[in-house]
Image 1: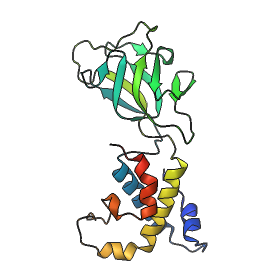
Image 2: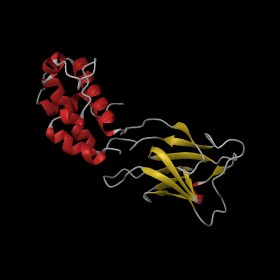
Image 3: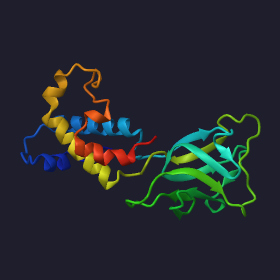
Image 4: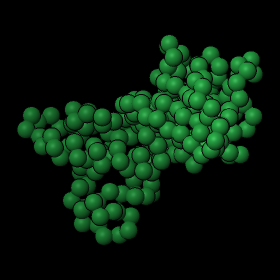
Length: 207
C-alpha cells in the first residue's frame, strides 16, 4: 500500500483533471515513500505479519528485558528460545502503550504512539529469556515490524508534500548528475528535501 492515494496527491497539487496520468502520479508517490523510508530508516505502513528472530546476547537481553533491533508495532506471537510460547499476559512493551485483543498485542493508532523497542517479562510471569542450543536467532517474534500499521498523519502529510514537489520538479531532478541522486533519480540526502518536508521527517528519524 502507498502512504497516500493518487486522489490525495491531486488535491495537494490542485489538479482535478479526469485525464491525469495516474501512472506518473503513482510513480512519484512511490518515490516519495521510498525517500521517506530511506531518510528516516523506518517503515510507516506494515500490511502483513512477518517472522523475525532475535539473538540471545548481551546486546539484546538484560535480565527480563529483550531489546529489539527493529521497530515493532504489533505482536501476534512470541516464542522463547526454548520453544515455549510467551503470552501477552506475561510481558509488557516499552513504550508501555498497547492494546490486547485475544493473543494479538497492538500499538494504539494515535499520534502519541511510538513503536516498541523493548519487551519486558513480568516479574510475576516466572519466565526468563533463554535458548537451548544456539543463542543465534533463538527468540522468534511474529508481528508487524515497522513504526506503525498505517502511516501517522504527519507522515502522510510529508508524503503528499514531497510527492507534489517531486512531480513539479521531475524534469529538473532527472537532469541532475550530483551524487545526491541515485541512478533511478531518487534523492538520497535529507538536505535535498524541501525544508517543510525535512521538518516533518526529522522527529521520525531512527538513530
